[in-house]
Structures are given as C-alpha cells and as structure tokens.
Length: 485
Ligand code: PLP
Image (cartoon, rainbow, N blue to C red; front, side, top):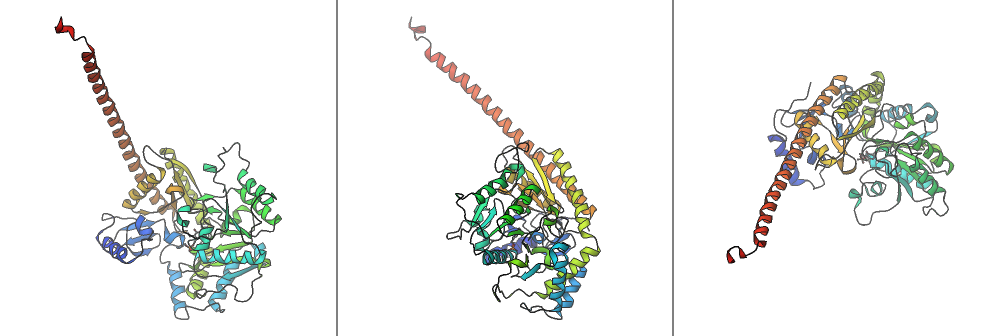
C-alpha cells in the first residue's frame, strides 16, 4: 500500500460528512478542523478517507494505534472477547488478570513486586485525576507542582496542571498547581545558552521547595511528561529528571510521570522513564495500552496505597475488549521486536528529518525519542513558525501524509506514526515532507521577492514623487520677478 490522493482535500464525500458533523456537533471539534477529511477505514499505517484518498497516518488516533489500524491479531483477540463479555466493572476476569500480569511484566524487574495497579475511567485524564487523588490521600497535602508546556488532559483538574493557557481560560478553575520551568533547551526558559547551562531550571525548583520563604507549600505531588507531547515534543534533559527524582525522594513528594503519550513503547522502551535511569512513584498509562480500545491505569508504589475500599470508583473501568486486545498487543510487540523497530526506524526517520534541516533554514530543531518526533520551525519572512508548520502540513496532506502541530503557537510538526512503521514507509513520509517543504520554501521565496519588488517600486515611486515635489517647491520659491522685471 502507499499514499494516494485522487481528489482535492476535502473531496466531495468528506465535504458532505464534515458539513453534517458541523451542523450537529459543538464548535469544540478539533482534529477535522486541521485535517478536513471524513474517515472511511484504516489498514496498518494507512488511513482511507470517504473519497478513497489514502494517507500515511502519522497521527494514529493521537498515538493510540500503536500497531497501526486494524491489526489482525488485535482484532481477533477483541472479537473472541466480544463473545465472552465486554464490561466487567472492577470484578476480576480471566481477561483482566491476564492484562494485569502483562502490565506488570512491562515494568523493570526492580519495580514489579512493589507496584500496585489501579484501573481508572477510560481516558488519560481519568488516570491523571486518579494519580493526583492518590498522592493527596497519601501526603495529606493539596498543591501539585507541574511544568511549563505540560499537558495532562481537558478535565477541570487536569487543566489546572496543564501549561497551555488558552485551554484553561475558564472562570473558576481550581488553581491547584504551581508551574515551574521545564528543560526546554532549544528555547531555554531562563534565557541561558548551552555553555552557561547548569540545569538552572531544576535548581530553581529545588531552591523554591527548600526555601522557608519560598511561598509554595510542600506539594502533594510533582507531575511531568518525560517527553512533552502537546508542548512540542520536548524530551526532558537527563540531569533535570535525575535531580528532580533525588529532590522528590528527599522531600517525600511522590513523583508522577505522565506516560499517557510516551508509554507502551512509543519512545523505544515500554516506558520512557527507563531511559532516564529513574523509578517514579506513579506511572500514568493510557492511549495505546488497550490495543485501540479505551483503558487507563496508574501503576504505583504500594507504599502510597492509603486508599480505603471504593476510594476511587468509576463505571467504565472494566473494558474487557481493551484487556484482551491490550494483553495480545504486548505479546505481539515482544514477539515481533517492536521496541527494537521503534529505535531503528525512529533513528532513520530522525536522520531524514535532520537532512531536511540541512536544506531548510526554517527548521530550527529536530528532536524526540523513538517514534515520537518533532521538528521545530523558525519564522520565515512574514510567516510565523506556526504558519509555516500549517503550510507544510497542508502541502503534505495534499500529497498523502497526516500529522499534527504541537508546541507554542503550533511551531512544531509532530510525528506519531505506528510503532511497527516500516523503513520504506518512513522513506515515503520523508519524501512527502521533502516535497511539501520545498513547495513552501519556494512560495516563501516568491512572497519575499514580491514584497521586495513592491518595496522597491514604492520607494522608486516615492523618489519620483519626491523629485516632482522638490521641482514644484523650487519653482514656487523662485523669484516672481522673472516676468515682473
Ligand atoms: N497526558 C498526556 C501526556 C496526553 O498527551 C494526553 C492527551 O493527549 C492526556 C494526558 C489526556 O488524555 P485523554 O485525552 O485521553 O484524556
């Protein structure tokens, strides 16, 4: 299979379904506003729209479809489970206990025996809510420390932890979070250069928490993503997270890692924290975990388990289809060496993106871990970085590649392909991106040339006007008496 776009975007059938959707759904629709298609079906790394256009899918349901669309073995597991039971509250079932065993097996050996699982409501935000509630119960404290650029969900209290101001501009937000700088080294939040950096961002937090006059009480938890996703695909700096882990141990503040997006192999290990040599107190995992079906869990150190029976309930915590497909997915990933594929094809894709950076000055940074990659743009001529990303995105969509923007003002092109992406599919995406970037670079150049021409024309016009003006002024100033004498 390969990408093939045969109509303008949106085509006629997509246009009809999008219009019908717009008539009945809220104005908070999101993805179809950026990628205006109606979805017909998915096959592996490809998505077909209602008009028969085939796209290489580097969005994969916002990182949910870890093995791409309609993986036959995951479909088989879910179909078999469908005939047995679909919903089980939090009763144990064969499917659930199988899934639990696999979840624990995903953790490093040293964490397995002292890890407890809590099944949450089905979304990532539900997992974050549960993690914060658990830490508050354990510490008896109320505040939470989170970081600039972080994203933890769209519910009221996960928004309070989220950096993105636009999405939290609601009256009556529970302001439970104190925000601190994250190690966004490409644009250092403290304005330092790489040479003068001694990870001052984490020292700032350390000073504040240790300062009796720091103004912020000791928090119930510190929460962060190890690669900020919505914030612009920013991997945390190793020294930052190691010092944060030491500090939180010293102060007995639970460290919560939000692995909703980074988990389930996305970065090349089951969880990103493994690559940083730390052990968090709570891991929040969702998105890809249920083999395409909704599921969300927290995996936490048993010492935090001060919860009483039914302390955190929820009806949809027993999705048997997610358990069956999720357990199968973990086994398939192991059998097929998918983590290795993520590291290998991820490095290939990153190298290709770096080559594009060599060609285009508007690419400021290429970064990420495994198959969670981002390209940060810089402004070009009159276009902001976000506008450029948008133009490249639209040009790529017309050629058959779907991806999303992320970061401040959408300045990052973000890639979340399936983890079983092949080398050839990565090459296909790179050649689409290369063509899209060249098109945008060319139109930027011609726009710059046009604006230079019109400036030249304007200044030439004003020169002519100036000389006419001065001639008129001169003749007006010249002695009347020419003819008067
Ligand atoms: N945390 C992170 C890091 C995420 O990327 C997301 C969603 O994108 C969430 C939490 C929220 O997950 P959900 O949208 O399933 O509530």
